[in-house]
Length: 222
Image (cartoon, rainbow, N blue to C red; front, top):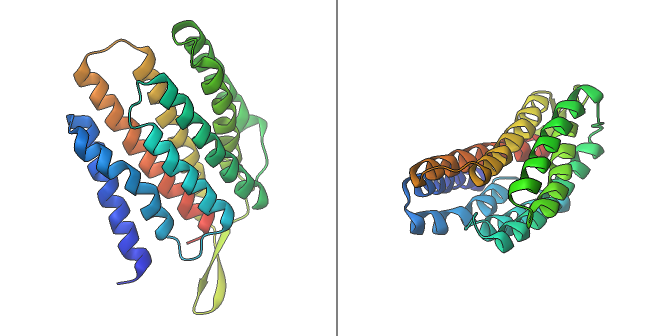
């Protein structure tokens, strides 16, 4: 079995363990599995670019910092790490020809505005940092939704072959990443029981893992 195939299986396993551990309150499982996801995803790419590698390294740091999503200092540190990742993804998307379109930007801008206002009212200590991160997330998601985005390419038997379906992977990944971060805001801002908070964290992590897989698959053209 190829190294990349083994890495994808390991990514799927660590992602499943992360989600199950968080949703069921098995903290040790969650803490061991979560930092393994992005290194496994990086290993699943045949020849990752320096920019993509940097994005996944930053995401790994963000995952470690966000092991406790209720610690303000750690959530701000995690937002900083993920800001680097979102910037790298935007650079890769722009290099593929992605551009910001009004149709894609407006709903994301509206969502960012609602979240920024809610955070300012209920979590003022973290609001500026998370709002700044939200701008970078919205930019990446908007670029990923550009319908004119050039298709990716992969090498098969020594021949470069366009892979147009990467457009849909990138668009879906951008949307899911936005949903995942919106769920983080929901979990933080809406009072709920411990059981509901665990379920919400499981939803955050499952959408995050799928979003990362789709974005990396699309950006790598594999």
